[in-house]
Length: 409
Image (cartoon, rainbow, N blue to C red; front, side):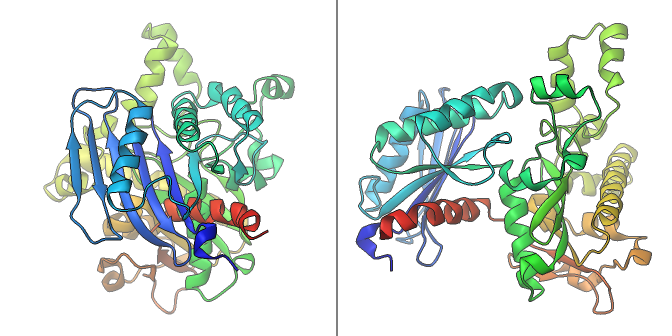
């Protein structure tokens, strides 16, 4: 049995290009001891927000330049030390890192070695916006605690169970293999957590449940999960494919790229920016906040209504497609910022799908809660659920499960 001096805490780090999100959890009861965010790293206006949940103290904030990720993590370590939760504590069992792309090599949480780090670096061409920042966070944490297990938990890992029929694009197979072109999927920690929690909500084991998970935030993705294993997901080689998102187009005819090059004189980089940062909801109506879009819809704004309608149309298409892939569906689970909070999105996504056994109870759907809950009427054949995601807890659990046997040996 794990004892306190063997370490029961896990620090979860999510390193972005100019930010570090972090949480310190005690795995004896999955309680959060501290949470925080460092943002605008490398700018004069850097900010660190730290909430010491273990002590119940007030949130502390630092404002001023933080030069790089090393300085950011040192500042985080100093804040944790103020609360008696420093990185030098024997209670700290491991540091778990969110890594966006693990390719096909990494299908499970992995202790980071030089070889693992080299493979994450080799994947930079297929995740140029994410993996470099993840690598920086790993190296910085290793420098601060070289004696501590560092674990990579990959966004893509949950989706490595997809069959080749779902993962392959229909392009020349030798070209695809030479350049690692295939569908990898993302938001995997969220899809894993939510599909498992949905099964628990239904009082069943994950292996006995088929779930369509709809992770709807500024980035959005859907997955078809059969018996706890992903069999299809909407994001592909990159997080651009699939649903309409806050600033990303989602599915689009690939020839649009060639057309813009030839007719509009746009470069590959121009089109990259267009599809990733100037498309989706913001491209359609100028807003990527669903609350603002719904407010505008209620006021009769035609652009906002069109954006909402396109968003819902794409969502319905994926629900129908994944229903067909699974054959039998036990539940549909809405999660992430929009999925958890936007009742009109949930209602519209299910409306008209009664023949598939789907329905939403208006009163249940209107309830706001941070707990998993059903919003479908009792007569519905397929449960419709709202399940708040917890990617940090999922990373901490996977990290601790990997290192705790070593702690107990």
